[in-house]
Length: 131
Image 1 (cartoon, rainbow, N blue to C red):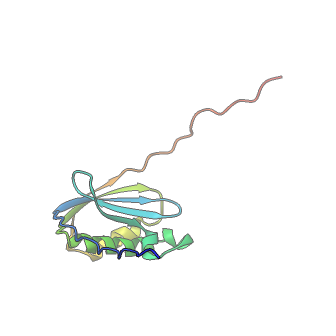
Image 2 (image 1 turned 90 degrees about the horizontal axis):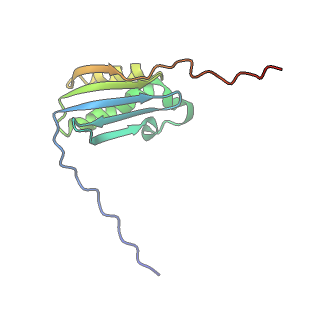
Image 3 (image 1 turned 45 degrees about the horizontal axis):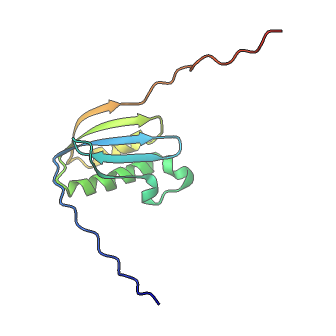
């Protein structure tokens, strides 16, 4: 029999940041929140499935609130003091993220931006042939 190696414990990350950008992407089915530093390197992030929410519960404001609280508390361990927020998408979870940030009032908000692309009518469709 082959001897399996024991899993090595996770290394502790030595990251110290004071400001970051919270990118919130909301879709019809899920919410993704990623915290990046000023250079664009990912610090922490995840979706609502990380908090064990499945199926239709993933897009609820409460699931987004729980996820945002979890990620921001983890980021405070890295020394995070102020964030900028960029929202993208048209899901319901925006309110939950705002509520979570207001409840953790040790982090200052620098700015809030909207990055949702605008929908338009699209290109002209194919016209039926005239007989």
